[in-house]
Amino acid sequence: MKTKPKDLNRFVQWKTAVLAAAAVAVLAATPALAGDNDNDGDDLKFDLVPSKGLPDGALKGALKNAHGRVKIESVGPVEIMNVIVWGLPPNTDFDFFVIQVPNKPFGLSWYQGDIETNRNGQGYGRFVGRFNIESFIVSLQGVPAPVVFRNAFPDAALGPMSGRIHTYHLGLWFNSPTDGAKAGAPGTTPFNGEGDAGVQVLNTGEFPDLAGPLIKVTTSGN
Image (cartoon, rainbow, N blue to C red; front, side):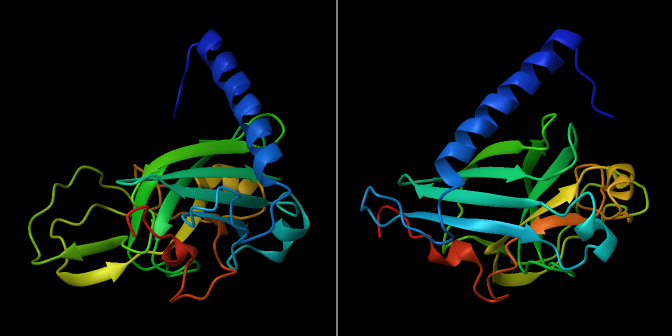
């Protein structure tokens, strides 16, 4: 369970509210896949939509307005990805992943970071990394891996062997199964740092499995 001193918690909530409001102003009126106005050809905006795995009750109830928007800008050696989400339960932690396919079983996935909603159910995350047509996972040989967490989804002691697998989709999960159940979406998954997350809420499911939005992001050098 995450804890913060009272004053720090208030500051984080205030900062999240300010950043979310700013992100909404920039992104909310932007249609999916609209290009930026800097004409450099390396920016992209697109939506996050509710996961196909969510129960009808949740989609008609607590998550009926769940949505998100992403902007990715290539700045040479890295990309800057800004994510705004809204219509989610207030004051709730979520986990953000880069994934192979948008919906279950998700394929190869890697943990990118956290997004916490404010009292209005809005959240904002800013991530820096490689989020473009070259994003991939590869393993030349299965090698031993550390086993740190031993719960319902224990760590694997041996990594897989795999050729280059491109990961062009994004997904957002409840950090806690309890929070998911409160929103009408029960279930436990391994999609957080400890391996005891809730279910997926949002993803890039408007795009085909084999053509996620990151495939459209070119580097500044291309």
